[in-house]
Length: 197
Image 1 (spheres, rainbow, N blue to C red):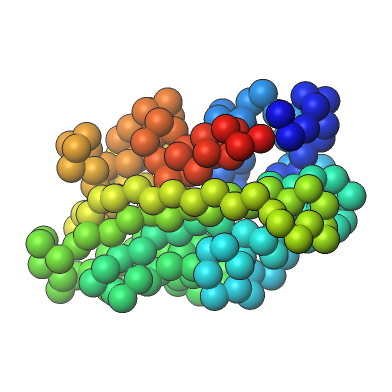
Image 2: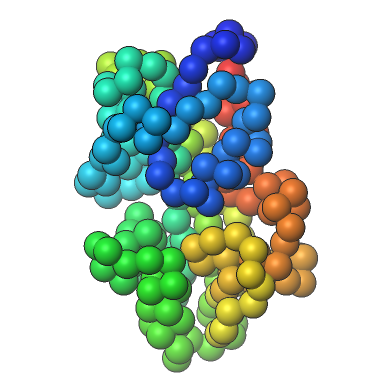
């Protein structure tokens, strides 16, 4: 293992949905959220998921002097040239919530035919041993699906209610937490990380 079991690792996220999923998958690590150290969230100024994950991990490591994990993830819709992309959490504006973002995406997709609604969730997980780590561990994964025309299901968060999974015959928001963590972009990336560390 890269770290002893007792080593604290800071999670650079305030997103409760992400925190819950990360704890469920990396439960054998001593992960503490950056809120417990009163670390403010970093400005996500990168143009890619990797850049934003590094910015967030470096910020958390810098302010806590501990190793840090950061997740940057989002939804890429082919018919929208990759939008919402890195702006997934802010798609409807800087102060938008999940519902606002989801509704904007549904509106933007209104005229897109069924056979052109392909999309994927992307997740990048970065682990930095310290703020100046020149070689951070980077894990990334994707999860293929299509965009529904209306919400289905009440589990999950973000765009889950409109992300259709043909192989499961349901939306991401209709999966239970265990099944979602088995399939999802975040689950895949976190398992890569756990194998590397």
